[in-house]
Image (cartoon, rainbow, N blue to C red; front, side, top):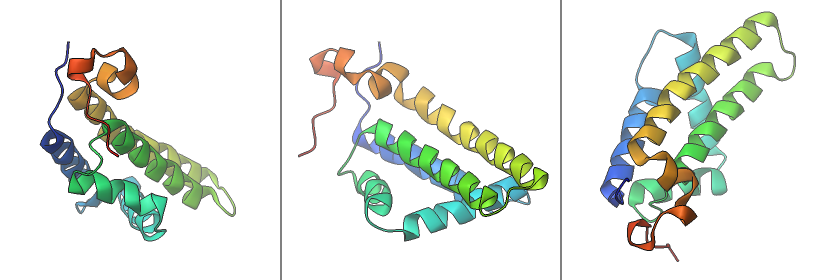
Amino acid sequence: MNSLQPVSSTINTLAGALYKVLCASPDPARKEMREACFDYLSLGGIFSNGPISLLSGLNPRPLSLFLHFFAVAVYGVGRLLLPYPSPTKVWLGARLLSAASGINFPIIKAEGVRQMFFSATVPAYYRAIPVT
């Protein structure tokens, strides 16, 4: 059974994921993901509050981290396919989702599936303290 990960662990996981997204890469899918991440965060509001609260330690919930990275990937695919999808853009979107999975699955592994998705089933002494 996984013990409660400290807040610093979630922040380190986020920092590692952001590094993978933002580091320079010749891969066009990574470039699209990087641009989607910048555009997603520049939307402001709930789109930037979640990641910022994760980085600052105000929201130590790893599920929020997973959901924001998933949202960035979906946003990136949407950017590619609108207004007119083409076979090249669909292929690039599939590669972007593949690259995003390579970032999201290690987050799930690091934080623990049960702790992330089924936190209500984790005994109380393993649960994160609710952020108010």
